[in-house]
Length: 422
Image (cartoon, rainbow, N blue to C red; front, side, top):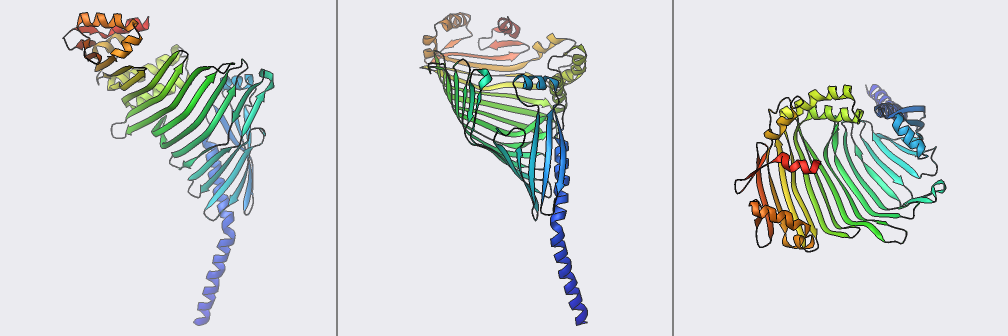
């Protein structure tokens, strides 16, 4: 009996050693399947992705992939700018115990120092890190136009379920134009966490720029800003299939020629959109930005469905400070559910709209811009503008296509929009 036990022990040990010795081959095979599937998923109407060759070894593999722009308009634009329409990537892949790691670089663009390091688990989840070394390029054919970027990184994590998180860091960018103008950008950072659901990014993203300036040949600022931030947040209610997207833009010390804004912030939302209808409208526009009659006929049912199910537009905050002056506003427009057949009767939208508007203009802003005074005086006479110690206030409710002010006066929304359309 003891002899048989010993044989079983030796067999188990031998089997374990065999598994360990063969495991890199298994990891290599699993890794190859994951990479092949991943490359196949990159194919789209714009880009064609393919594996040129895959040489799998025992502890490592060598892979070459090719990415070709297939969109004719993009090809023409890239060729006009002297940029390649095809990228060839060489990757060295190492087979680990529970993952494969890859180091990749673009072989047909040796002057562009971008590398990619990835670690892919056997379940397909991957960590990635793009690294751009110090890059400086002068376009001799364009009167010495130049671009310079300091070492930058983009890293993150992606899962087989489409969930993505990332962090971006670009310390500085300089662009010199052929006319002598210069653009300087510093402190570009970003991060995001979300998931691509059909045509929507569901999650949040933040992009920040510490400083940006455009200078003329005499180094005089034509445009400058500090502490600019863009925040995007989107939510999908899976029970109702409704999508809401929120956008926030804020910045300090905005300079445009002779105008200087001390602070600017806007909060905008597009909400309660029917996900299916909205996706079809977005896809139709992406496929044909200049819609012909046939494309328009195809998208009309989805537009009707979008309005029929209702949605809202809102600007929850618009704040601007210029010198001693300040401007604040918020508004909301709601298309109620049941607004049907708008393609047959577009004018039915106006009387269906609901919402509100609140606006404040400070005394200091009116003093800086006397042209505002005439409109405010007319509003005071008509009693829909109220004067207070700090400035002027306008408040109204939107009912049946007309703004109803606090004094009961009604002004059709169309009469306010027509001057803007003109």
